[in-house]
Amino acid sequence: MWRILLALCACIACTAVWAQHLERVSYKRWQDCYRLSNGTVEVIVVPSLARIMHYGFVGEPNTLWVNPATEGKPVQPGEWPNHGGDKAWVWPQDEWEMRTGRGWPPPSATDQVPHLAEILNGSVIRLTSPLIAGYGVRIVREIRLEPSGTRVHILTRLEKLRDGADFPVAAWVVAQLPLPDVMLARLHPDTTLSEGFKLFREESWKAIRRLGKDILLPERPPDVPVKLGCDADILAWFKSPYLVVHRSPIANLVDFRPGDHAQIFSNTDEIPYIELEFTSPLKVLRRGESVSLEVTWELYRITPERQSPEALAEFLRGM
Image (cartoon, rainbow, N blue to C red; front, side, top):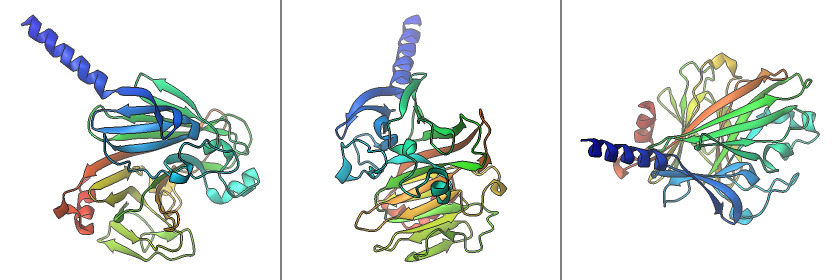
């Protein structure tokens, strides 16, 4: 009996080690990257780019967009090469020029310089930015993969390091993905937006349908960039057969300006990608305080008979 128990313990130990497998790798000629895998999905973090650059089933396509024109190239402070992937910024965007002296690109320390990488408990990757000029904050991100399944937890914090700059700020995450077949948003039942969304740009979407009271189905135009915001706790991207679900629960809808929490951006077909974005509540931070944004990712294979927008909407309703 004891031999069986020892063998069982050894198997459990091996499973636990594999479930938290983390290794240093090179990725598309970027060096000193980290790969997290649980045998089902893999996540690759590139600290030199301050980004997550890969998320997908092991051995299958990346569901994040990577710009082929910048593969392997380093970041350039002030130039903002659009590498793709998932990164964190400071919200609201329309205050960047007032705070830093320029409206674009984003503040350099957010995603144009390498971030410090640390490994916590052998399975969590922590990225820490330098101080962000004009804000007195730094960005800290912790990326953790569940031992099984496809769920990734991403905790993003703005931490106040200096006194002053006493104005509200929020953490903002931006994930770039390839052009989808379908995009969906699951709305909070108490949204005050009569159409379910607001537009951040003047350009119009091809269409924005509403499936029932709770699901938005935006259709992108190919020739102009467009952006909408909504009070959603789930944003979803589908490109057959893969469904990617980004989830950020809303504890208190009144903590957000209408339409700020969840945002979808679509670029033109000249540089084709879309963005799924979330923001935390706005908060005036004192030194030593922080504001946090929690987002989880999940990945599914969807069988052909469940790939219609209506079927995908029902899937999101059941989550």
